[in-house]
Length: 273
Image (cartoon, rainbow, N blue to C red):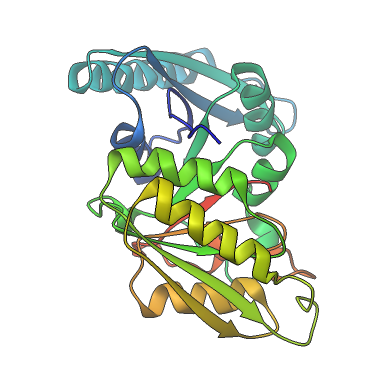
């Protein structure tokens, strides 16, 4: 494990508060030399109608405005902009990610469909699973909140991709790590391994060299137990696997990011194990 760096970031933008918070968080973590931010706006096609020329020009102008803002704040960063029309916004984001190969995708989400998650047009968890790239989901409540504490569930093996992300975040922030294991008799019965926990703890202690502790949680749902703990200790970030550790209700497809209100300061970083 060499430790990731954030030199290529994909930011889907909708020109609302989501855009501002996603770009701000991107600038907090990106390397400020030889780096690029890809701004992507997806206009959803309705009944096969193409985007009107005047609308296209207006949206292109907004992309250029954000490009200018970023280049003024961080002159060493290259900004690419892309405006596409698609029937499926999430699929368009996935296709762009597979094309530009970002180190991380940063998505701002102001909406909350906690009761009806299927109404979401974009699921960060699905994008993380389908592309294999880490996805950071941020709410407007986190816009002025720096990352200081990170909750990391540890399951049946050493989570190497999580460790890489922690090392990258360690370069940017003074962080403390809260490792958690969840014990239960239900579907997560085989999720825990003492060997994985010990080796993860040793790696973070010896390599990351940041404040570190461990907590045993009890519950039948890994995501719900971890989220509750992160909220109780007022953590700034939750680092989870999008499939095994972020699903609150499998039947409805409800994930942790669906549960968070717009004012939440908790950031969700998902990475496929």
